[in-house]
Length: 221
Image (tube, rainbow, N blue to C red):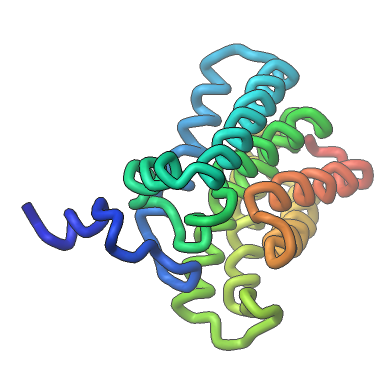
């Protein structure tokens, strides 16, 4: 079997750093997010029920994370199973999974359904794409781990996602164009805030709050 492929699963080989492209993790992030939204759409669950399920999962995931960090054998097993999508920084700290579930659950709890889903789409697409562009082309630093190029990518992705989402639900209008521009800024700011708080938590929550406030002035969703 190919040695490069096998090295992904050897515990002794190093995990990826935050500055690595780590395309498998980004693919996992996007695909699991889209699968989750599809499952939500097909389930017929209310936003409140889905938020409760996700919150319960987040609590369970946090408890497991704490357990593995206290138990070396459990931690080694988790690293072995999840190594292809784990970062080196997560070997001895909480991974992004429980924050992902918590962030989406809070968005569904506190914001209208369409705004919560739009904020979740920002998390699904803007986070990995901004990281990808920032790692490859991020020459002008805004914050230690944030570049102007990555931030522009986050703005662009959130703007495009909002335009497509709005065309599906409300149709073309000048209001949608203005809303999408504001949404792009909101998404970019929320992605920059991941310098201080896990991106899986801050993007859906901060984006959801910003979109909710904009919706008072441009009531599209």
